[in-house]
Amino acid sequence: MQQSMDFPGGRVALTSKMKFIFESSEQRIPCYRVLDDDGYPISSSGFEQVSREIAVKMYSGMVTLRNMDTIFYEAQRQGRISFYVTSFGEEAIGVASAAALSPDDIVLPQYREPGVLLWRGFTLQEFAHQCFGNKADYGKGRQMPIHYGSNKHNYFTISSPIATQLPQAVGVAYSLKMDKKDACVVTYMGDGSTSEGDFHASLNFAAVMEAPVVFICRNNGWAISTPVSEQFRSDGVVVKGQAYGIRSIRIDGNDALAVYTAIRVAREMAISEQRPILVEALTYRVGHHSTSDDSTKYRPIEEIEHWKTAQNPLARFRKWVQRNGWWSDEDESELHENVRKQLLHAIQVAEKTEKPQLSDMFTDVYDQVPSNLSEQERLLRETIKKHPQDYPSDVPI
Image (cartoon, rainbow, N blue to C red):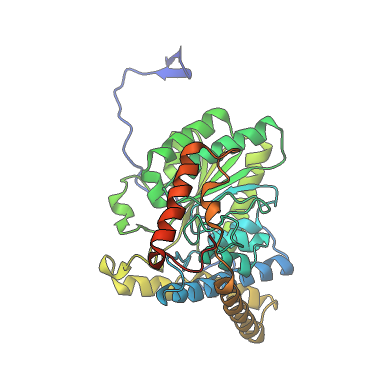
């Protein structure tokens, strides 16, 4: 007769048989997909019906993002901006997940989620101003390029250190819970973030506090030059949720409809059931990690080309949109041409816009600037006057 006993945390069955839990199951957790490689819906996938308006906006956003990445990457290579990070191969995750959210949902991103901002109405000119760090940049030039942020769009400013946004996201979600808001928090990370302590602390924090937060992990195969095989021995990221008591799902991150459907359901569960959800989106980072990286030094070019062509998220979604009669080759050409013109104009404007005032380096942290910062500003101004040849002439003093 099986017996059980109450222990801290709940009732546990007792057994006289010693049995270790195996480190992993024989079969990997399956990956939810809606569209096959040729863009045909898979039978019984039960995907969320998408209107023509939403579908076209999703596809247009993905195309716009790819064009933006191409042109800003070239601008960095020309020395016009100092740094850039692309989303090549991962466009579906940011755009499609944003389409599944409410504008009231709060986003704490990593650095490959400009698609979320695009969806929410952040303009190409605003992207350009931030990358050029001029006085129209909301961060007043104090952040690296691509570290976007927008209060208007409920999009927290990106920070470079990996995974720091995760515990913050849980705290924000708990505040929504306390205020009984009809919204959730969505936070993004790469697979490399799951190797940080903040990831594990955040999952435990969210589970215990029952915070309405959706964790979206872009498992793109590479944390800079470290492959996932050298990061963890578990079956990817999705299984980590169960260990913390979090409902989880693995999805095809290159399938825009699968991302849209899964995030719509995850959001609903997070809000209605007041619980965290972990989503592992399997994808591939086609581009270099950043403009400071050369990924051909640590992975074969053939591998990159395979994912660039055979598993292209834009190509797959375009086939589905076209089969529905919502898109044409003419629409495609017109979109590329218009976006390119807008981007080139935005860059020209951003380049000609003045840099922020020097005093902006010392403001916006304290209500009243403390004496040590005032002293630093005084010393900086004296140094600039003494050595003007060593400082940019276009920075307003």
